[in-house]
Length: 211
Ligand SMILES: Nc1nc2c(ncn2[C@@H]2O[C@H](COP(=O)(O)OP(=O)(O)O)[C@@H](O)[C@H]2O)c(=O)[nH]1
Ligand SMILES: [Mg+2]
Image 1 (cartoon, protein in one colour):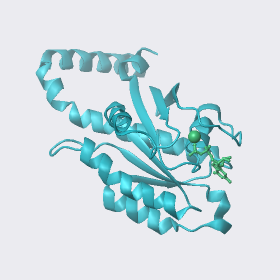
Image 2: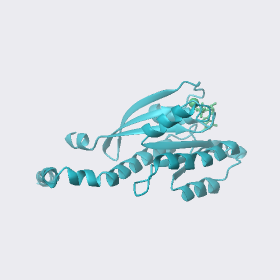
Image 3: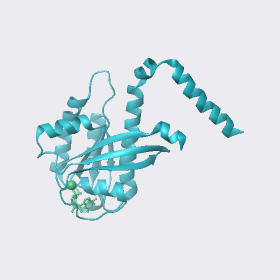
Image 4: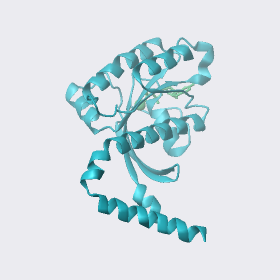
């Protein structure tokens, strides 16, 4: 338990995408493991504590009703609040895919700075169960992600919990990595003494554990 506290991480995640692509369905699936079917249009920030790779992680998920219809001051607030973004489209809705393709450069322009870690973005093609109605190929999703340095998943919020779990856990991993990379100078400034102290505490613990 003590070690979990050391690594506890906050991850602010914003769900973006046009209406009806399954942003709420994905969020609720992650939070409750369930697929309800109808979600309404309530905007909420959900908090959820889980272990990701043994690390306690506090997810704060901002599920916006429709990312295109909100005013720019709100978008700016979201962009600054977020540690990571989940951009959702439906594989049956070409316009929703085009919208995601347009959002990525906006986020990159707002959040990425030269020499700093890129803000983690996951692109999600949802409604994989409706493959008979597919209009966006997996390849297109994968290529978009590849070209914009994003992660990519195709999932079905309706039929598969595990895939949805991978999306959120994958993003948390990326957020943690980006933070670790960004914090190196701060750690150095804090002084080497503190680092040596905490390291030796870890090793001392390891030694007693292996006895
Ligand atoms: N077949 C199928 N329907 C889905 C899936 N995800 C969401 N839906 C349905 O799509 C509609 C819109 O979902 P919702 O989560 O409200 O979309 P949002 O507007 O992006 O939040 C609802 O009727 C959901 O039941 C999925 O993976 N497969
Ligand atoms: Mg919704």
